[in-house]
Length: 219
Image (cartoon, rainbow, N blue to C red; front, side):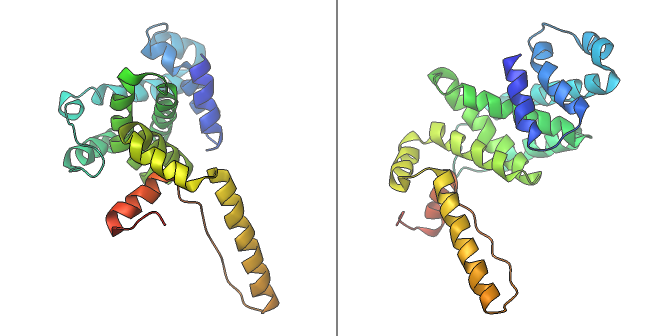
């Protein structure tokens, strides 16, 4: 039940409808066998049952041995993960189902922090399937969290090295950028120049990925 509430809290940032909130809250009770789909339909209606069943079907696809037996992740051949993502997108006829599943996987990767046995498996799945899915759906803040947590468990030494070099929280870096944007906007206004200024703090995986692709040091 607490996981269901956490999923609903994640979805709150996406302004979903009431049926989606309810489906998110009760999903784990169905997945764990405490309730059946008939129980959900009786209590909350056909639409909530349909959403929960859609998330269950997505979970079924992810038990594929062809996916779980792969070893390479960061920087690896992406043919199989791409195939899995296409399968997921093809079977989901309601974007709300994908949103619920993303919320559930976000909770899952948060929860394995102290579980060494499950961390790698969950991080691998999230990195290769669900962070790209969040990107595809245009949900940047979920994508960034999934990438950073996955990177933390898949490449812990590289993650910690960059985290220490940053030496400040991401929110502090974003505050710095916001202040710079405000100053530049003031300068443009004073100069009677119309323009739009945008900026964001790069997250840890994004920094590492750019270092790898461009052959750059952190500095």
